[in-house]
Image (cartoon, rainbow, N blue to C red; front, side, top):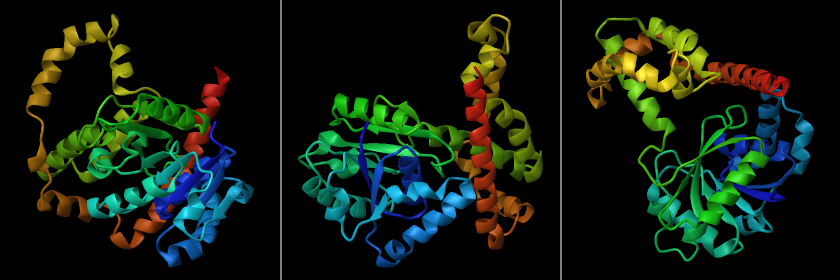
Length: 303
């Protein structure tokens, strides 16, 4: 297991990653190009620990670095959390590739950019990957590991091992794809959700209830493929024989990109809590997710 990791960018995602690695027993060095973010980082980390029910003593393993080079010293893994802008990413990775030790893995939290877009032309492009978390990663453990065409297989092996050691759930992709896996799935479901709301077929509250108390409740324990395996006596093959034509018809008629309209947004926004409560509701969500995470881990320990 790695002993030291570097966090580049200590916004919301960077702080969550800091907690992930610190509670796993790693030494964590944190740096941000914004002096104000750096100055408040430890206080914000304390707040995040309290909100997530984490022991704040884990932060004894965290060091706030004065500059990027100091943050990278001795690091075996770098988790970069910079803005989703390609020109900024390219500058960051040019610096990381120049300053980090040759065998240090450089991983991006990017949710929109694939590694080949910012690793191209760098000597160390073989050690650059995307490690895309779900927000917030300290309470939602899945991490999509996506290589570029230049990423070395052993880098992916090390990345997967580190994430398992850090008690995350790595999902290893075989190649780059726009949106990775999670966002592609989310986009399809969200398109149909917005379309059903805009057509007046269901209210925003009813739509969310359908997922939260229906699909989502099953998917907390089993993914969609494992779910259909249990939804027919003969498993997946039997399910597809019985329901495949119906599901194909529904998917063929489902909404696509045209569903992301201003009207759908206005209808949904009018039914959901106002923007003035987003921060408060996000904190409440994270507390509940932390409690759910602990409960689900306890279920696994009972097996």
